[in-house]
Image (cartoon, rainbow, N blue to C red; front, side, top):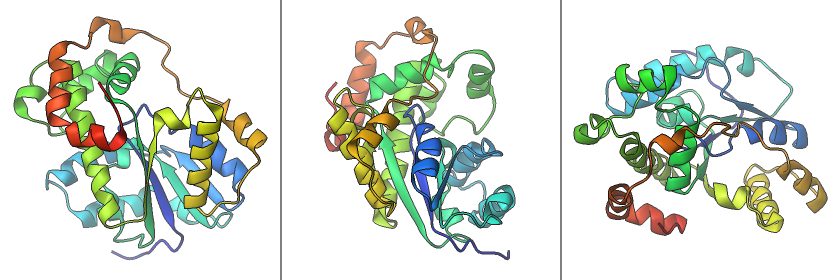
Length: 259
């Protein structure tokens, strides 16, 4: 394998449904030295790569080669000095990509689990082609406990997925520069909280600050919101909440979430 990526890369990682699409326009347009792309094509294959890599079914060398190939056009550009990739698909691949991109950092965006579950269901997690893929295509859904994975209960599956994915991303803080952000703070009804959160992100990325009015403008730009109420078919029940309380206590405490 040949080739190294010379510029620093920051991955914005999450379970998905955390507002990460917002950053592609916000950072690219307000930070002159940053290019931020949201799920640049091809990206979906990295969801399979993440899950197979974490299950020791593909090598880090394979993923590194794929990343160089899939991001060739980005690597060849010269109009930025830091690249930010906002994509939940990449959550498990960071150690493998380090082989070709030695200067990596991670922004970890978390969302309260019940809100996340509803949003992911509304976006079609268990419906149509997305639902078919989750139920039938090996490797698209994370390798969760078999009894949960085979339960046919999408709320329980997403609860387990919330724990698994956030745990994987959280472990990156031991090796890489790492910033934890809460969805609820970033897109808070309290505009001052949202502004403060954006300022922390800009500081982490070494991007010059904006005025409060400029930040407030950007916080008014929303993207990729769920428009259908598919989650009504799959209500959160006591057993789901109890599962999270028992199995996600450490994460809930760390993120200051109360169910």
